[in-house]
Amino acid sequence: MSGKLFHITTFGCQMNVYDSEKLSERLRRKGWKPAADREEADFVFFNTCSIREKAARRVIGGLQRLKPLKAKNPQMVLGVGGCVAEQEGRNLLAEIPWLNLVAGPGRLDEVADLLDGLTADMPPAVLAGRPETTEQSGLTPDVPAADAPDHDETPAPLSAFLTIMQGCDNYCAYCVVPYLRGRETSRPSEEILREARDLVRRGAAEIVLLGQNVNSSGRPGRRGGQDFVALLKDVAAIEGLKRLRFTTSHPKDFSPELVELFGQLPPLCEHVHLPLQAGADAVLKAMGRRYDRARYLDLVARLRAACPEVALSTDLIVGFPGETEENFQETLTALEIVRFDSIYSFKYDDRPQTKASTLPDKVPEEEKARRLALVQELQKNLTLAKHRTLIGRTVEVLAERPARRPGQLAGRTRDNKIVNFEAPSELVGRLVRTTVVEAWPVSLIGRLAEEERPERLERTARAAQAPARLP
Ligand code: 5AD
Ligand code: SF4
Image (cartoon, rainbow, N blue to C red; front, side, top):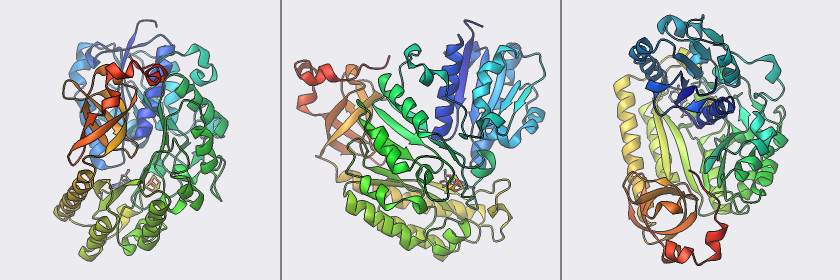
């Protein structure tokens, strides 16, 4: 097996990014090496997303374009994982007959072992649903890396994802996730903490706790899982961890104790992603979100009272079945009232099995497009106005990677804004202070503060303390 090359392409959410990272860790441990591109790989894997139709179609298109590659290299093993694999299962094999492996999101941890005995001329393997053995924690047992940290010296990402729960029990009317990722289950907190410590030891400065609904863990009526607030406190206490984030949280599960944590727990960053989905009560009700506009706005007010500098982002869907023009206007007014720092907005899509797909009064495609454009135009102006107020302010940035423009680095502020700034590459991995000099709708331009310039850093104790960094 040694010397074989793999190539993974990840679509969709951060949980897929985490799952792909775990799969590559497992493969590397078995002697596989990452391929520079797909052409030279022995194993090509697509980890896919099915949340909206466009995402799913893109995956199928991508797979179809692999046909010539497969023709050139018939021994290449081609696999599809994630939500499209779960949803389409064997249908995918009919559509893409040169596929060798299909694995749903709950079965990805079996892929590396399966490859030991799978060649391109064998009948394809299909793994879907949840295996019995993971019933208890709801997640696959952790990879040996975290069990035997001394043996894994692969550097962790500077900002590392950590999945703490899987699945979702909310069954929002539009959402396919509960059908694809299954019922909600939390990982045991000792396992989460062990993995978090290991990530920090391997160089992660920031941890992002992930789940479809992270803040429901430990809430009344939920199976298993430590209280989310207690978990945040435990992770935040890990020595060496600079920043802690979590996503996604559901407004209905956002406890007063969680609100109070902002501004109190030093590594916890001042940013909350809080999906609103729609501004009108009638639409929220039809969506099955279990909060109304007033309750959402109250939560925002309480968060800002607890931590005035907290940044807020959200998800919005326009054109849910039955959404009237009047309803839609309430989404626009909600944007004006809250003044989010950023939003992700989508046209409603019918998804298989969902309640909304059976509802009458579908909004025509052109109307959805019109509403989406209005939402995005409004938010662009609001974000830009917000960004402009930052000009002249000095902000802490985690220098994450070289920016697209040569000579610049890119990083994020604690409140999750992207900052590009001129700096030498040896500052990657450091927390630096930059002064905002320009504001754009999606990012800021910063200037490295005087005291952060490398010639000075070398003379300060701070440079010696900076974490050892990525390749
Ligand atoms: N149509 C449009 N957007 C959707 N989302 C989830 N399901 C759908 C759908 N059927 C959006 C929601 C969710 C985000 C991840 O994707 O806004 O929060
Ligand atoms: Fe989907 Fe709603 Fe669950 Fe989020 S909370 S994953 S939108 S069902």
